[in-house]
Image (tube, rainbow, N blue to C red; front, side, top):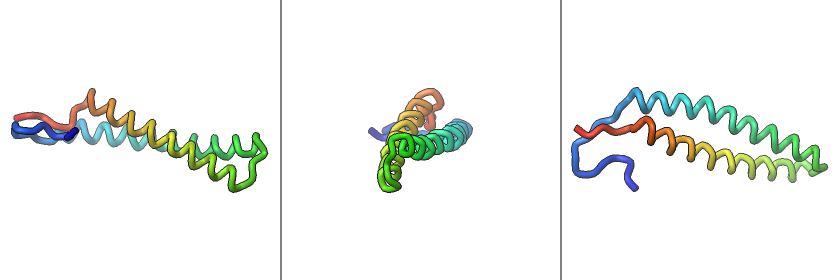
Length: 85
């Protein structure tokens, strides 16, 4: 699915783009920080080796990526990036 509408002339709504990107940076810092810290803490709690803890952190990082993609897709529905002229 294309992010830009087809057929009609369109322009970017910069305030919406900047708002969504700013929120994504803020929320992404929290999500990825929690993923790394949570992976480290669970690794210690479960008695995993350093390699096991790093694998757990990578899995949680992947979950964080899925969360951020979902956030940006939902935010784009509320704050559209394109306006048809």
